[in-house]
Length: 192
Image 1 (cartoon, rainbow, N blue to C red):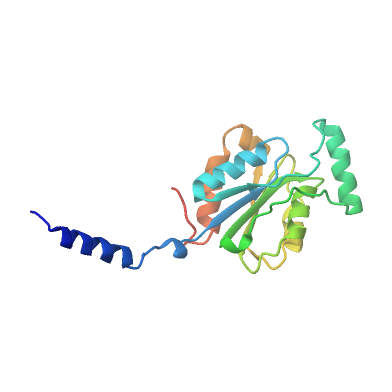
Image 2 (image 1 turned 90 degrees about the vertical axis):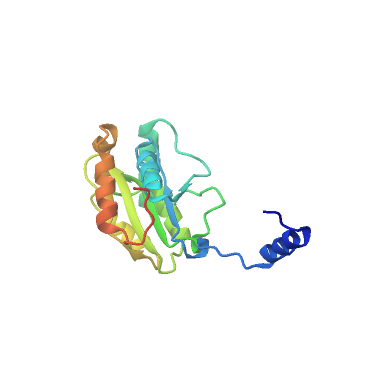
């Protein structure tokens, strides 16, 4: 079949003028925000990112904790007792682009780590769906209650609590998938 030059040009002009249909504006967007000191929470965040097809944002402190765990523990305890939360690096995410936001960190002193608290203090979730996730050694204790008190204007979903044992022994994948299936909105994107 041979098309005339006029037919080809007319088709090209029509194609260029046609509205661009895209479903991107209708897609549900998910963000996974996390702070990780030893890498356990980072591993969970990466698994959530992969499972949900989410974007990933790491909370970074302007002056990171010392590598000596004892000194880091003392500093974080001081921050929690005094309320002097650590300053974060600039460039926090624009939450208006997301429908579902997961925020996580390790459990320190039976609660949220100061960097995550600092993040929550700076954010207004604007009634978006938000779920906490955390890694812990002994127990999550007051993490969920304190997270709920600090997540301003969030529509909270059930939290995901993963023991560091589950992370190191590669048992977290099943727990994460089960939690996501049971607790996240049915229209949340998944890479299952």
